[in-house]
Every structure is written in C-alpha cells, then in structure tokens.
Length: 504
Image (tube, rainbow, N blue to C red; front, side):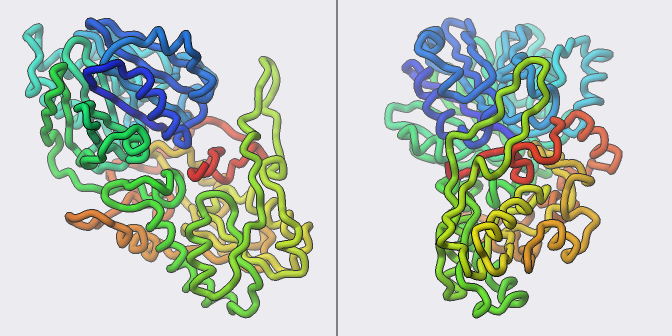
C-alpha cells in the first residue's frame, strides 16, 4: 500500500508535492520520493524514511520544474530494506519515463519473464512497480515508433498495459517533454482522484484529503479503466482504456487504511465507519446484553467513529481508555542485527481509572494476526477490568490480500481455519463479536454522499476469499507471499499491518 500524487502546473511544484505527501503519510512510512521535470530533464530524490526526514532544504532546491510526482511507500513485496526499491522508478526509453504505483501486480513473475524474452527489457529490482513501468514503456514504444506522441497514442499504450497486467494499480507517470499520465485498473481496487486549484494547477492523488489540504478543489475520482493525460499546455485528455470495467474498490480502505476525512469513489470514509459502528451494535446486542457493559472504549485511532456510534446506540458511556504514543516509530535496525521487537505497551498506555472494576467493551477496526489484540486485552485486565469484551468493526480476516496490502499468509491470520470460540480463547477476551461480511458491505455502500450509481461490488477478498480480478489461485497466493516482507510474531503492531492508524 502506498500514497501517490502527481501535479501539472504553470509554477514550481516541489513544495506542493511535498505538502501532498505529508497528507498521505499514513499510507506509507517506509520510503518517500519526488521527481520533477524541467526542460525534458528529470530531477529526482528518494530515500527510506518519512517525508520530513527524506527531504531537506537542499533536496527541495534540487527539484525544479512545473510538473512532477511523488510517492510514500509501504512495502508489501520485494526488498523493504533496499533504497533502490523506493519510488519513483525511471527508464530512459522511450522519451524518458518515470512512474509511481500504488497496488500489486498478481502476474508480475510472468510479466518479468516476458519482458526479458520478448520485450528485451531488463528489470533490476524485485519490485512489481518496475515491471509495470517497463510494460508501459514497451507499449508506448509500440504505439509511437518514433512518431510525435499524441494523446491517442498514450491511450493506446494504456490499453496495451491493461491487456497485459493483472492485479491492482493506480499509476501516475511523467513522459519527458510531453506530460503527465494517470490510470487506474479496470476494477478500481486502489483509489485515485483528481482536482484543480484556482490558478489551473491539476493534481491527482490517492485520497481527496491531499487535494483539499493543498487548496485544490476535488473534481472527481478517476474511473476504473480510465486514463487521464495532461499535456504540457495544461490540457486534460481522458479516455476509457479497458473493456468491461466495473468499480470494485478495496473495502479495507474504508475500514482502516484511508484517512477519515477522505471521500473515495463517492463514499465518505468517516460516514462508512459510523455505519459500521451501527451495524456492529446489532451484533453486540445478540451476544452480550448491554446492561452487562459499563463502558465502550476504542482502540486508537481509526476505530473511534465506529465505537462512538455503537456506544450511542446502546446507551453506554463512551470513554478513551488508551493513550497512543505518537513518537514510537519503526525500530531502527543496525547492520547485522535482527529486528528488535517492541511491546504494544510502548505504543499504548492505559488510563487505569476507565478500566478498574468495570466490564469494558473494546472496539477495534479489525483483527488480523491477533497478537496485538491479545496484549491489549491483557492490558485491560491488568488495569483492573472485571470483564473484557472485544468487538471488531470488520469481519474475521480469513484470507490473504494480494492487491497491495501487507496482509499475512493464511497461517498467520488468527481467524483462518479457527472457530469464533477458538479465536476468543487465543485473544483471551470474555466475548468476541465480529462484524458480518454482508453488513459491512452494506454499511460502506450506504455511506455514499455523491450522486451517481451506487457501488455494487467491493474487493473484500481478505474477508470472503473472493478475488475480484478472477485470476488468483491458491498457487498464486503462495507465490505472492514468498515475496512478502517477512515479519515475526511479536513484531511492532503486526496485527494492525504495522501502520499507524489512519487518523494520525
């Protein structure tokens, strides 16, 4: 999972891209990169780390130009410790191409072999984004063959890309001397939207919050299968470049990943989480009588809207019982050392008075590995809680995600192959309440605040095992997980994707 942004303007864009990446920092803290273009020359800086650490004044001064793009990265495959796998990626032919990508290609291995044997292109990293860049470069070369590049040529190349690659992808690319290109996979699994400022600057970004926070007016989401090309004169060209495109966005974006102040594909993320709390309340009532619950406490941060709505509907006091230490980041790793484990207790501290002598209902957005949930339940007991109930605003996570979220292998998922009672015993709570899959889909769909056709399908593969691209087999999942970033039981916040909550 990553956050991407692209800008075409009549004025320098380096600061604008930097500001947008800060607003997308919740989508990735592993690495950051910006590339700009001036007089057909690219200027790039990228490195591991947070945006504020990667870019200093000297780096920003070295990024001139009126168009550019950037990315914040959270690795799901490849080598997370390699500086070379930070994006953007660059290839010098045709024209000169640089690209940022959010998502995951499910047929990257096959494509890599094709690029070597048929297209005669070299891939130098383990990143599927470099594979995607080279497929785009090859298709562009086929459509132009030395002729001047026109928008219809760009769209023909994107059609070729869509026919070859499988999986999820939201892409923004710069074509040297020609303009900015953005496109989205035919299912719209990963988000991408577009906006404009009063001075005519056009911005494309993963979430609407990046537009609004940089004084751009949100215009619309890029449609699934659509390509947008902005030439150097600022003219916007669009075309549908995939047959049978149907919007099926990743539902985990609304449950956990996106910021609550974002609107994605017409759905308010905040309203979706309120709705999830409402439907979860009905599940709680059927499991634990409300008069046996003294207080509802969220597990920070993104579960708060669901917990508040649930507490209001049940008529139970809502309280903050955990305080998050925002300054505990990723563990620093010295060469030759293994990953140093950190307790959840270094990231969360309890307010003892909210637990002592009470029956508490803890509300989380999701439960993935279960290690964090188990420790949080124990923290509540250590603080003096009489009983600890646990409710998840999402259904049981039973299947891996192959579309760009670092979801563990089936064996690491606490709900995979286990009954509700078995999961409850592992977590150590007195009662465990999960959201229903159909109720989750309905709750998110009903959070639509814009006009237009309602979303009929979501990618909810980690909950229901249905992969919307229709090309994912059990063997594919095994192969994809071979390249997944390896983690150990007890590593920092593994059950919550090792990411800070989206509200931060």
